[in-house]
Structure formats: structure tokens, C-alpha cells
Length: 136
Image (tube, helix red, strand yellow):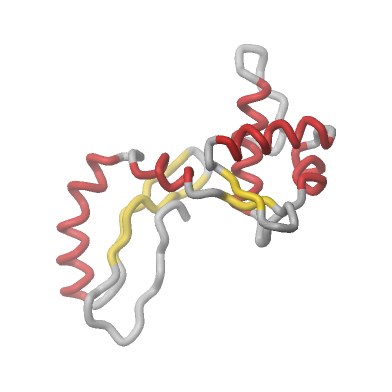
């Protein structure tokens, strides 16, 4: 999705902003304040606060003691179902491949703008391995 949070007329502006908030937080190198998120979204702080509260209610984001926002554990639950059949079919083959080659093996798919890792397996016995986390 583009950085523009204004959806086309047939889309939900609120949902678009919520999803864009998750994208911003996923790309952020550190936790963000609500003020920082509102700037990134291009909306008033009160709108950003309502979006944060809704996402927080669904465990998609969490706030630390200082009020800074990061991605939450609810995202992992959503990610489990992504291309489940492909992940299930690939896991045994990736395990064999990773162990035979002594290298990390993974499956990635093209997602309109990015290549996203769905499943990864590191070898059992290796002096070094490259970490390729799902979702990256």
C-alpha cells in the first residue's frame, strides 16, 4: 500500500489507516509515540489515538510503560493462517534441504511490492546460519 492513507472511494478510510499504522510500526526501527505515528499517517493525534486503541484492543499492537507503540502478539496469530497449505507442504522438504546443505532454507512469495518469507528452517548442525524470519 502506498504511504498515502486516503483510500479510493469504495474503500474504508478507517480500515486503511489502521492497516497503514501496522505497516508503519512494522517498518519502524524502534517503538513510536502516538504523536510520531500521527505524523507518519498524516492525521490528527486524536485520530491516531483512536486507531491505536482499536488495534491495541485486538492485540495487534502494544504500548510500553512510556506509551511507545510496537507490533503486538495478535499479528502472529493472524500470520499463522497465511498460505497455510503452502507452509505445511514446504516444511518437511525445507527441513531435509536445510539439513543436507547445512544452510537456512525458506519459502518466500511475491506480495505486489515485496518478497515476503512465509516459512524458514535452519539446519540442525551448522557452525553458522542466516536467519530469515517469516514475515520479512
